[in-house]
Image 1 (cartoon, rainbow, N blue to C red):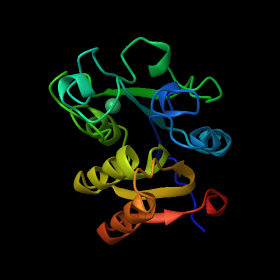
Image 2: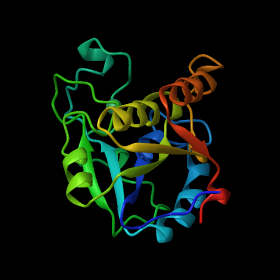
Image 3: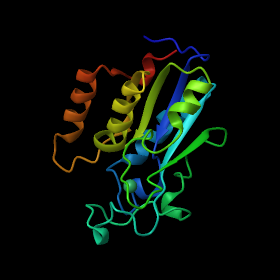
Image 4: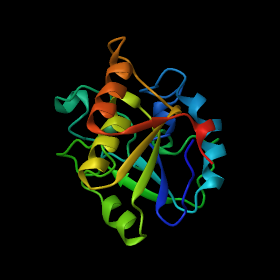
Length: 188
Ligand SMILES: [Zn+2]
């Protein structure tokens, strides 16, 4: 069991965007299943931050530019919007991957997320969202590097699993680095 301290804790919702949910161009299998879990967590936190993949049309991660992904989350398109079921009206929104020459899996990469958290006195971050084996993992590991205590909520994340064990390995990698993994039901 973990008690939320609203002075120093923040909730981070990673990339719960249409393109990463079923029906999107880069859908995470059952990606939308995280939404009800995240929606239940949002009111427990005073400070909620979202990240969004927010790419230019010719982003380096796209196949045409030599990357590994189909075009996804192009800025100001429906695919880049939050899933309509996610209740994030009052969150602080962070945009990543906006530089066409830089990939950014982590919400900290090329953004002012760390500064914004520190300004607000945040010391511990609770990470949710998509996908376990890419942007959730990268955000969690970068969070540690930035000096935050990092908790990943295991039933509020889903993985792509390009290889069947990718999510499992990602969770182990996060644990080994010092990330605490907990189920949402254990948070008060
Ligand atoms: Zn992307």
